[in-house]
View 1 (tube, rainbow over the protein chains, first blue to last red):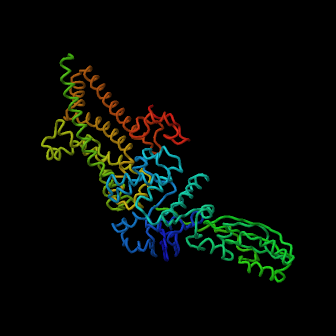
View 2 (spheres, rainbow over the protein chains, first blue to last red):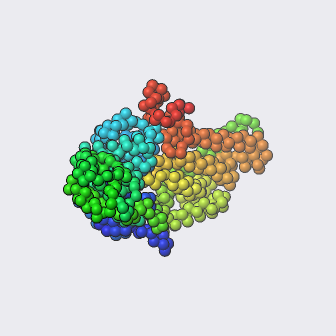
View 3 (tube, rainbow over the protein chains, first blue to last red):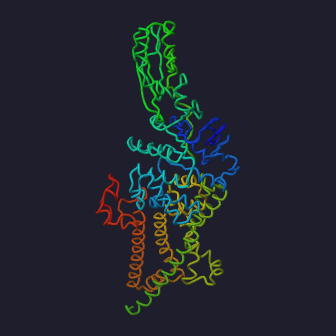
Amino acid sequence: MITTTGLTKVYRSGDREVTALDGVDLHVREGEVYGVIGQSGAGKSTLIRCVNLLERPTSGTVTVAGQELTALAGKGQRANAALRAARSHIGMVFQHFNLLSSRTVQDNIELPLEILKVDRRERSRKALELLDLVGLADKAKAYPAQLSGGQKQRVGIARALAGDPKVLLSDEATSALDPETTRSILQLLRDLNRQLGLTVLLITHEMDVVKTICDSAALMKNGRVVEQGTVAELLATPGSELARELFPVGGEPSGPDRTVVDVTFHGEAATRPVISELSRTYNVDISILGAAMDTVGGKQIGRMRIELPGRFEDNVVPIGFLREQGLQVDVAGDPAAPATAAPAGALVKEGAK
Amino acid sequence: MTWSQMQPLLYNNTLDTLFMVWWSTFYAVLFGIPLGVLLILTDRGGVLQNVVVNKIIGAVVNIGRSFPFLILMVALIPFTRLVVGVSIGPTGAVVPLVIAAIPFFARLVEAALREVDHGLVEAVQSMGGGTWTIVFKVLLPQALPALVAAVTTTVITLIGYSAIAGAVGGGGLGNLAYTYGYLQYETNLMVITIVLLIVLVIAVQLLGDLIVRRLAGRGSRGSSSVRVGLRKAPTPATAAGQPAEAAPADAPKERVGA
């Protein structure tokens, strides 16, 4: 649904060059919720703004719903009619809502319809329908200043849906909200994704957001996508940093007299008593060093770090047993690169100027 | 000079002043808003970024603003005669007043529009809106309270300028104060004239503030916390009837009808 190939954005100021995006290939499938996560300065904001060409990429292509926007837009900096028409079918919600304070809630939602030259009665009907959808039917005549943050974002979402988009872009939509409101907004996005078949691309710096609603995720660092895939794929990737962040498990790595393995459970394996079976079958003492269990995208997934006595060579058989059970087993050998070692330098400029 | 002698003089000259201020404000707004909008649109990072055009307009505006009004008026005499046929009287004064007021007002418009959150412009761009939509649905409506305040300031400045114009043959209250008050030692008339000008300025300021407050009452960010007579939003009745519905729980409820 959304594909970017070799997307690169370089900002020039004077003779300094900052690479905000460095050859990003992203592939968002139809009907999924796709989360891009990264620290501030990683380039994720530039990425999402490049998807509807609010930011013109220096090179690379963007294709949304089969339309190659980068080809459509031509060379000029100004958005031509073709690009504007394409944009009107890509919804976008913003961290700071960006509602017009001079208009009522209903008039805010009607704005994209005015741009589409929809007649007054149809605009009004559609706006009220959308308000109902986001649970604010009683707020049509209120002004944004009279709403709470969560309500404002609901209006923002209703506005983004006015053009019947196939794709919704969410630029840190929950980052200005408290945890409880964040949950309700994420729930709303999830519902819209299911009910309308809406494809959602969201960027965030909160792992919880990815955990709560994303089917797929990508991790960005220094303008590059370093990992991407469905949550299940990521969890199945040995040494995946995202998987580790999503399911942090504590405990020391393997030593000479012990073997530490990370076991990842998916689906039905998550509900079987595998560990006690292992213990009984092979008569080994198992220590659980850390574990995390959660529901991701509606699937139950867990990770566990366990310790088996003896070296790896002594434990080949029990580990083989675990693998036979359909579990994914990674031996936590030498400490993997610490997750927190994101380079502090080379921060890129975010946003437009 | 008796009151009956003063009365027609005061009346006619007040009308002359109002005539000059009204028409110069009218043209200043007519030309100043497009200029201010152009200054914003062509600015670096603007929707129609064009540094050359921006620099040229900026330079013209700056030159216009740096002329002392008295000099401008004298310098413009041939031009004034060309445009309205005369160079004296209220009609003759309107032309230099307009020329002085356009760049002044354009800068105020520019400042007002610059305060509009760029995020709103981006939001409209993301909906597929073009430049016209940005100007007429975002920039101007969002900046409306500030624009009204700018008009107020311009009107008051023009009242002052029109008095200067009056002193050099433009007519109006300035002319009255100068010819009778200063040249003929009619102190009473001069005092009355000055009081009239003060009343005029205060009235314009109060009216302007009232409109600004009403517009800002829609709750634009950073606006005063006083909300007077909301246009469509909760009337006191609904606010009192169902307070939880009318306002978010964390907002002060007693804001309507100050």
